[in-house]
Image 1 (cartoon, rainbow, N blue to C red):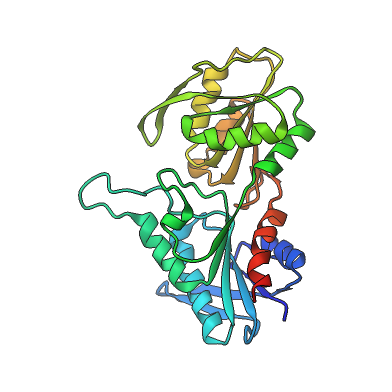
Image 2 (cartoon, rainbow, N blue to C red):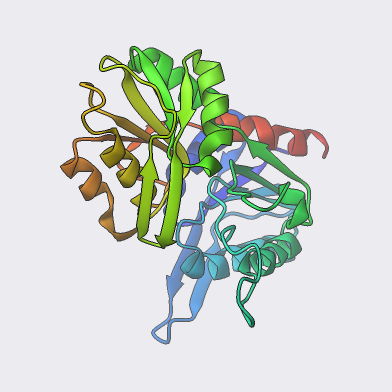
Length: 296
């Protein structure tokens, strides 16, 4: 039987694409809040004897996780044979250690919640940082969609004389893969962070000509401080308007307006719905979900 693809509210576009790519049926979820702010949730389609795929980007995890877990458990209660999660953006990867006494290691707590309610997980480019693998924190079968090929393809098609620049050492893993696939040079800046919104970068040994189009690439654009600092460091080094590419458009504090003020073009993948979405990664997510369906 074909899988039933159910989007949490706000994820309908990605769910529709996945249902088509995976040969599934697109269903629906009714979710709302009672006056006391408790969650009401109803599956609009019968999941009995079917594989259910819940589609939910986790851009706002605090308000999303309860409906998501309720949907998973309801599908299982109503007879779903398997319940998988496609979370194009996987939240709560930042706090991966206890830096001060008493701190919650929220990445591990969040992972336990998700791992306990789903049979498998597909996500795109999780921000691992200190973790060597997603398996270090998630205890369920998973597959990861790599967005570098799609980003590289967009650069090849749209950016002449590009040079890929990573705004900090953490971004090297992304820029190296993108530059290799795009067949263009890359460089990585040096960063010093004094706080969440206090960042400075320097060009280090970045070498570019006035004709180069600098393309800054990172996995997450949240506060945007790192990329904005990188743009400042690039001023007067090129005559070409810079392009900033992020996999996940988290965009805290309306930071996209600051990018517009400095003349940078923002491009993102559609792992988080946003007007800057230009690079479609639905097919990459579907490729990673398909093996889970084939095993059934």
